[in-house]
Amino acid sequence: MTTENKPNDVNRRDFLQKTTAAAIGSFFIVPRHVLGRGYRAPSDKLNIAGVGVGGKGFSDTNNAWNKGTENLVALCDVDWGQAQVKKNFELHPDAKKYKDFRKMFDEMEKDIDAVTVSTTDHMHAIIAMAAMQRGKHVYVQKPLTHDIYEARMLTEAARKYKVVTQMGNQGASNPAQTQMKEWFTKGLIGNVHEAHVWTNRPVWPQGIPVPTGKFDVPADIDWELWVGSAEWVDYNPAWHPFKWRGWWNFGTGALGDMGCHLIDPAFRTLGLGYPTELECSVGQVFIKDWTAEYIPEGCPPSSRVQLKFPANKVNKSEVTLTWHDGGLRPFHPELIPANDPLGEPDSSNGVLLIGEKGVMTCGTYGINPKVYLKDGTKLEYKQGDFGNKYTTMPEYGHHVSWSDACKAGFNSKEHKALTSSFDYSGPLTETVIMGNLGIRSYTLRQAKADGKGFEFPGRKKLLWDGTNMKVTNFDEANQFVKRKYRGDWKLS
Image (cartoon, rainbow, N blue to C red; front, side):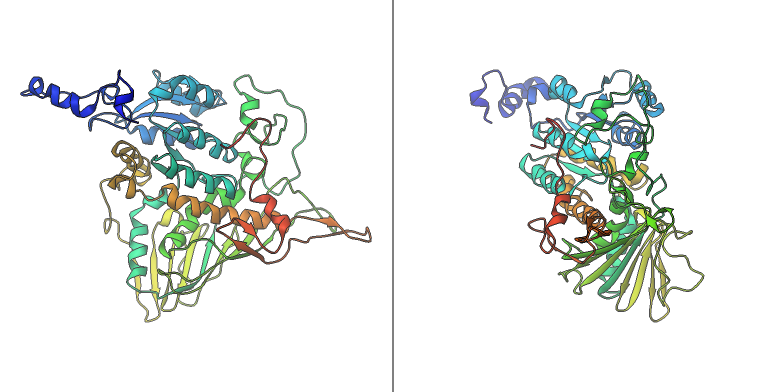
């Protein structure tokens, strides 16, 4: 947009030229309303709005606010009764309060520069898209989206609307991951052909029958907004708070909760892209003898997912990556001593990369990486070997680096330095959610032709066309690429 078509706007160059004489010998700050959209004085603050401001949203909004370095101008949450939502409201009494993000955007569009999104998984994409379409920078909690299609749409939208983006997998900014990449680039463990990633999640009820019962909606909750784009369900404390993670209607299970943290070190270090095939198995639940429960609405109690990736310029070997959850984990490879833990000290979460010359392992967020080589050498990461000005900040400065990049602008060096902008985290999320597509396909069942029992046609290796977001050998699985929204909700 040019200033010639808007006579009330002041051209920045003309403004500076005409005020130079008056400014000599004094210091002044050019306010944002004078410079117009797209221009910002270096000392100006970012105006941030938060959608979903309790739980993880509490730390997201306050880390981005950075003790007043930026302005927190609006707080939006569908449940004003949560303790941390109340606390956030108390900490920021001047921030406007909302339950409906759409109303917030309508009323405050000109006063908001950037938005954090920390809601249930099923609303991430719709809220983030609405913000980006208004030219707002966005920070979105992991997983970036609920399904694969949404992740692709957000990745493309970030480029289209020229906004600065970051996903909330804060371990991406952990300097220890820089160490892992350097070790690998030096060729210490050689090309990697096998990788394992595991977690103790779920740590919420999962693999259980669908909740039932009638409950009154608490006065502080807007339940219509909480359900949002999902298929309608009546209020039940078994859905909210937190326990929604185990239900496909709202959440993405153990993979969605931890996959973007734990698959990230392997994805980043090995330069992975779209997988080409996938196979999985899931844990069963027996309440009645000899009769496995069939609960397609919910995530399983445990699962294993195997993804295959082609060789690339970074790692010149095909990689088989296996995900384990529900407390399952891989066993010690030969090079790791029997008494050394895998991943974290209690082995509850971790990453293991097995190469031609050695193995590399780390915990959640890439913490405490180690290398074990065939010649008996063991290398450990030393705090301080790598770092930057954000290293000592909460969550490795993942939020603050995003705030700084928002002020610097789209395609700035600060933007390009972000560790999880949507150009990276979009494909990562697609890979993570691809695992859930496999799990849901595995549990599909249909009656046998003779009417005696059921068969499970999705229990096969799925072949994946990543570019076109399509399973090529079992069309029924493609229903999980893109879900249907309820009512008037849409991603546009």
